[in-house]
Image 1: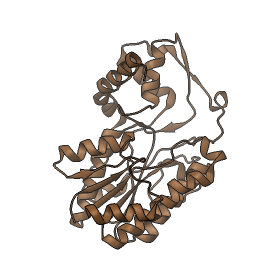
Image 2 (image 1 turned 90 degrees about the horizontal axis):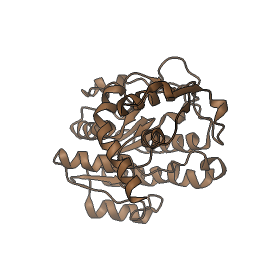
Image 3 (image 1 turned 45 degrees about the horizontal axis):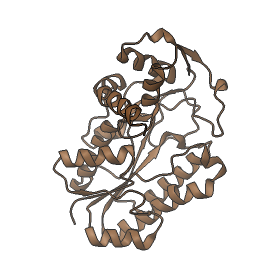
Length: 299
């Protein structure tokens, strides 16, 4: 067994993970959702038998949070059944499985950072289906199953909050942005780096199986996040005005508090992800370039 299999490789995390693996000199294959349906047990077994990866990272997911409220069964198939199919195939092949999960598994009403094994309590269909996926992996693979929860993701390889704010800054005089939801903006490049390190540590026996939190250090609100985006654009942050969640009612409730603790990384000999502002500043030129290119091509 050797190499890596990245499922859902067409998304933001999957793209940056494949790039990170290539930079680290790791062989990897990355089928997107059209090439590999993770709910298809026969297809999953065939891929693992053909390529015999040592590490599988599941980036495939139903991420349409609001749509999941009306289509929970469909979301559960991808977020719950899919991870179980992968876990069962990994159990048969001996591969390590890393499941990417979310802060939505928590109730979002905390006041201090959620620890890796704090009680969960999802308040949305999306959160419930992702929690089902966590249980599937950890129950099926108690010795070789890993869950990495993340949140507030942004990257150059897909639509996200940062790219939306870059676009809106050029067309809006002012922006009203929610200031009563706290979290940790996380660059997919940083998350990908930790997934690579975790997979390697797992193969070396240095990382205990279980749950890890893959979010940036520090915390802010969407309002504070947007003001920092404006600052990096050279725009006046005062054009960003605070508002409350009541101004943007959505089908799925958003967690008011999504700050996660990062204690388990150090036990695996891996530094947690850096502070969010430093990551955003490094990632920003590529985000601006990607958004500007999208505007030029109309994609």
